[in-house]
Image 1 (cartoon, one colour):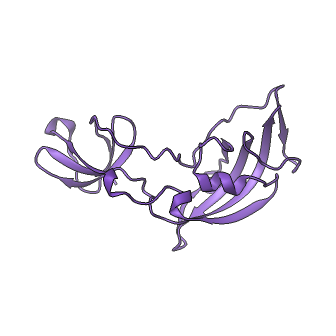
Image 2: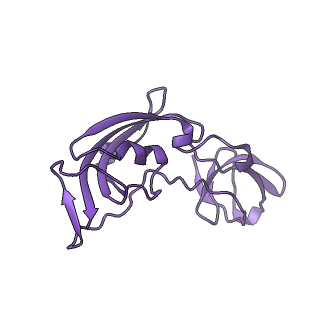
Length: 178
């Protein structure tokens, strides 16, 4: 799929759920304490480091920190990750693992018709085709559904909207602010 930046000004509601992307990776200092031996159970405000693998109901993997070789670090309860991921990590200690299936409401939400939008588009913005992934001027990705004369129809739903997701999660470290 071709990726391009599509500079359009558009007001699109952002789901605000966050992808499972890295958060705070700073090293612990004198105001934090880190457990790598199972001494803490993850709670809101803790910075956790985890390995995870995410699959769809058909068994296909859509993301894996293990495959990238880089653990995910995020602060529990701050919205840096989807709600179901926060919930799955809470109460786990270092070395513990869990497998959890999340319905769309706890992941990237249901697919929404109101997030399919038609926006002005001109030839000076470059060529686009149906199926291309483009980026709005806000950085939000969208998929081109239709190219019309002077406009394009974009789907700004997250690519995993409407999907149930299963995650296998292993807690590697917990850093607790003091």
